[in-house]
Length: 195
Image 1 (tube, rainbow, N blue to C red):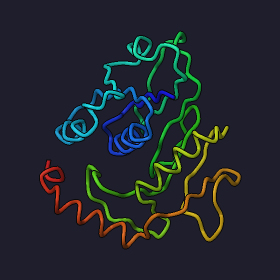
Image 2 (image 1 turned 90 degrees about the vertical axis):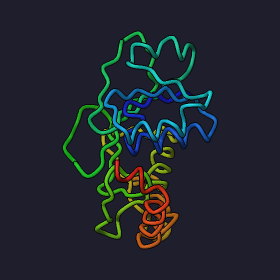
Image 3 (image 1 turned 30 degrees about the vertical axis):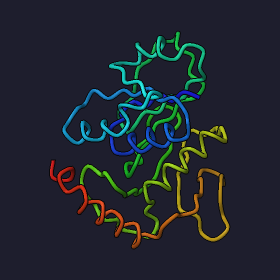
C-alpha cells in the first residue's frame, strides 16, 4: 500500500508518515508550507528509502506506478489531483474544528502528544494521545470503513472498533501519563519547541 500524505510534516501528518513507514508501507509526502519545526521533523523520515517527498500531487504518478494509493489530507491541506491518478481511498484528517468539508473525514475533538507545534495541555479525559489517534486512523483505513464522517474516541470499557459514526480505540496511556510523556519530550527536545 502507498499512502500520499498532503501535509506530511504537519504534526499529525508526521506521526502518520512515521507509523506507515515503520509498518513497511511506502509514503509519498507533500508539504509546501515549510518552517523550522517541519525541517526538524523531516530529518526523522527523509532518509527512509520508502519515503518520497514531492512538490505536488502531479508528481505522484511517476513515484507510485501500479500501487494502491490512499490519499490523506491533513486539516485544510486539500490536494487537487489529476483524474489520471487512481486513488483507492481519500480521507481528510481534522482535529478540534468540526466544520464539514467535502469528502470523507476522520475527526477527533482533541489530540495531544510529542512534537506538537505548540504545547497545549489536554482539557478533557476524552483527549487522545497521538499514538492512539494514529492507531485509530490506521484501523479505519485498514478496515476500509465507508463513512463521510467518523470520529475517533477513546474506548470506554470493552467498546472498540466501529459503532455508527464513531471509531473507538483502546488508550495506551491515560491523559495524566500522556501529558507527563509530552513534558518529558519537551524537556529532551526543548530546541524544537522554541522554534
